[in-house]
Image 1 (cartoon, rainbow, N blue to C red):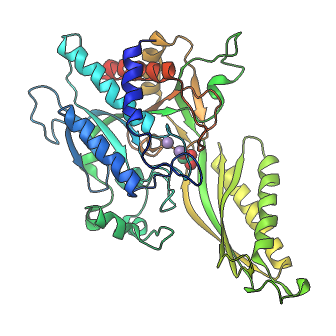
Image 2 (cartoon, rainbow, N blue to C red; image 1 turned 135 degrees about the vertical axis):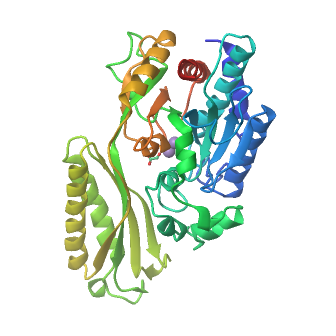
Image 3 (tube, protein in one colour; image 1 turned 45 degrees about the vertical axis):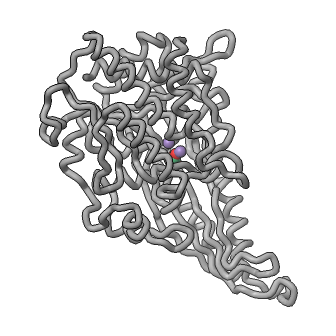
Length: 428
Ligand code: GLV
Ligand code: MN
Ligand code: MN
């Protein structure tokens, strides 16, 4: 694969490699509007401005870098129905280097390709293009994933969003204000939505799809790129167990109402309920005992549940089963439990016409590029409710993601840039 492109995307990502490293967890922790994520946003603005793209941050904190049609008015009217590509720069705690930044860096590198093609007369455009960066895609600071795209599309009530709190107790309103945003202007943005004619997000593959038996050759190697097909319906719920906080040394074992026990037994139940259902995923990845002391029986334990399934009714049934089991286990321990839904995204089928176009473009470069479903959520999935959206995935040899071990080979990153550039060119 052409080294120039690989160097371009790698050197873009290389500039980010020391930002937001997490010495304790490994990998990167770049929560939205943290110092690390802010530095990445500034990096993107500098890169886009350096390419003479017109950069602005909208009311919901989404950064837009515009490549207008030569000679056009550069306003909302001339940008209506534009081709938009992008991803996010925030990360999960202890995440990898590619989830989000690969899509943003590849969009910049694909733009470089397209600008060169336009300069040589090979590309003649009659459509504006923009690169976007979405805030809080992971929901790792305020709990609701894809918060920027949910606000943009009206999928979340801005009042609810503004009152979300991070672990330190800061509201989203406070943090957004400190970053120059006006909470009163947040919410569904018809002007911005009208500017998205099609949205394409390139992303690191986050499972074993491209390396599955179905897609690999005799050497066990799958194609470098896939085209997005569906996103598994998914949601997040909080289970709050309440019991009797007490002294670890003076409280006899028989006298305890320990919410940690009910929570621990519920976690085991989540595993068995999830495993018993075909195509389901059920995870507890976060647990918070209050007050959280070694010699303290907790008075409350919050745990966060992530459940995913292609059929939303099955997801609802699984959550109900888990809640029922949690209630039984809590009662047995002399505790209570309360369930709160924090977010839910229905299963997404990407736009058929756009997906066909992406597949055609990508297969010129990577003939075996398959259509691939994913279990991971994306801003493209939220936008898909209102605008034609599609995705490209770049092979991840191990399939590991949301981990420091997430990885993309240079040649595959290069193929991703070229595939994205070709796909965008075909739509411009
Ligand atoms: C985001 O990456 C998610 O799938 O939760
Ligand atoms: Mn992610
Ligand atoms: Mn992502």
